[in-house]
Image (cartoon, rainbow, N blue to C red; front, side):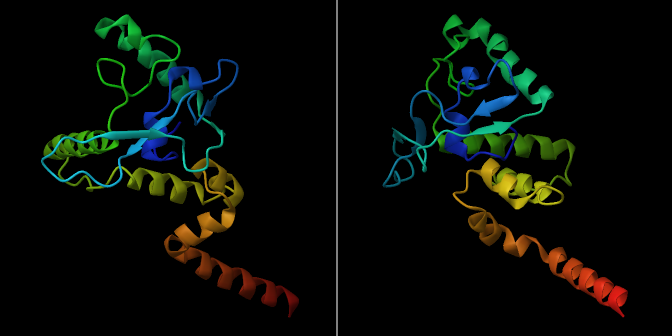
Length: 190
């Protein structure tokens, strides 16, 4: 479960047990439903509600995580044990409130923004990004050297066509690279 590879509700619905013990694959669907933003949107200044349901596709999938990330995911519940043993159970959520309940996705995004603001005090050149931009960053980093099918699976897209459509505008170097390859092949043929 590397930053950016999953959508916000999928990340918030993961339990530590979603990481397989024998491998560094993370299941991206918890044994139960994952949180999603309530529809219709709650007017600002009123209490927000949380709708809990299945992910968009309703299918399980596994993505590989590096050993360092796997170690962090396994260690996280233990670091929260002082808050309560209910946070250490194998089925406890990785991201939860102090009672072990789902975090509201909007609160999670707000916390991300507040953390960024604190970091910018020490690092003013740090770009301001939305939480969802981590997903786009993940995809664009992977596009160099990783087949689009693999990127598509990591992002949970139904087909590579979706991935190529969403990220087509982020790949301007591909056209220049295609022109260079074509010119090189023509040069070899002449």
